[in-house]
Image 1 (cartoon, one colour):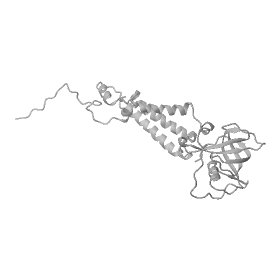
Image 2 (tube, helix red, strand yellow):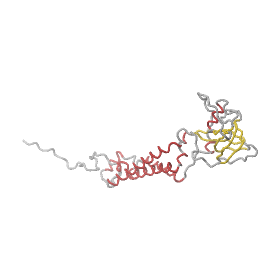
Image 3 (spheres, one colour):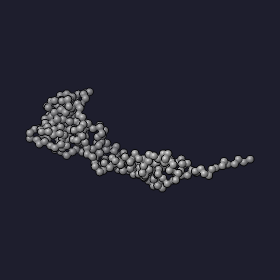
Image 4 (cartoon, rainbow, N blue to C red):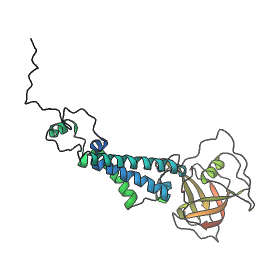
Length: 277
C-alpha cells in the first residue's frame, strides 16, 4: 500500500526569495541599505580627506596619518560594496518590496530608519557635517583658560642635563620645560626656545600654553608657563602663536605654571602639528 504524501495547506505562505521562509543571508546592500552604504562612503572619504590635507592633526596625534588613511579606505570600500550589493539585489532593502515584510518589520525593524540604515547610523552625519561646514580648529586659548592645570607628578628618573646649541639656546617642548621646573635644577643657566600660544595677556605677563595629547584632542591637557616680557617686546594678542627665548625664574608655584623671563618673542604661524605628545 503506497503512502500518500501529507496534505498541504495552500493558505500557508510559501517560501520565496526575500520572504519569511527564505533563510538565505541577506546581501550587504540589503542589510545596510542605500543610505547606510552612502554614510559609510562619506565617512570613509572624510577620513581620507583629513589625512590627505593634514587637517587631522587638529584632532589626533601626528603619527595617526597612516592608520587614518587605512581606516578611511576600508570604510569607503565597505560603503561601495554595500551600494553595489544593493543595486545588484534589485533595490531590496530592509524596507523592501515584499508585502509580508510589514509584519517582519514590526518584529525586527524598529531600529531602522530611512533607506534601511539603522537610525543610530544617521548620527554619523553630524561629525561629517561639522568637519565640512565648520572645520573646527585645534584647541586654543578658550579651552586652555577653562582647563585645569596641575603640578606634574615626580619623575621616577632624573632628567638628563640640557645641552645648548650653537646659538646658546636649547629648544625644549613646553611640557618638558614645565616638568623640568618641578623635577630638579636642570634649567638654571639655560636660555630655552619655547613655542606655544598666548593665553590671558595682562600687562607685561601672559600665559604661554600648549596642549599635550596622548591619543586625541579629547584627552588633551594644557602645559603652561607664566611668561614675563621685557619692556621692549610688544604683548601679542590672545591665541597668537609665538616662539620665545626665556630663562627659568627659579620658581615652582603650586598652580602648575612655573615662571620664565623672556628676552625675545617672535610671532609665528600656527604649527602644522599644534599638539605636543
